[in-house]
Image (cartoon, rainbow, N blue to C red):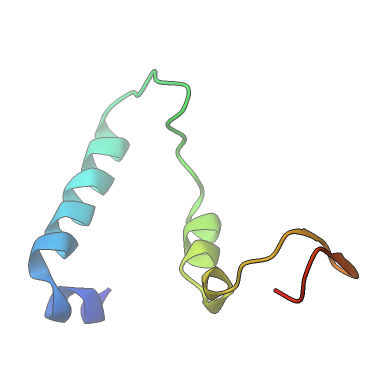
Length: 63
């Protein structure tokens, strides 16, 4: 996250604060989930640059 710290320190600190909040509190709102580190890494991968619908081999369009 060093790139984010250099680009936007305020957002970087907001993310750190939210991470701390999630680790130290118990959230009872069903729509808020705590995902694993592996999921967080996958969501921050180049895969997020692609949008598609359907299933592999049966896409609605090329996406």
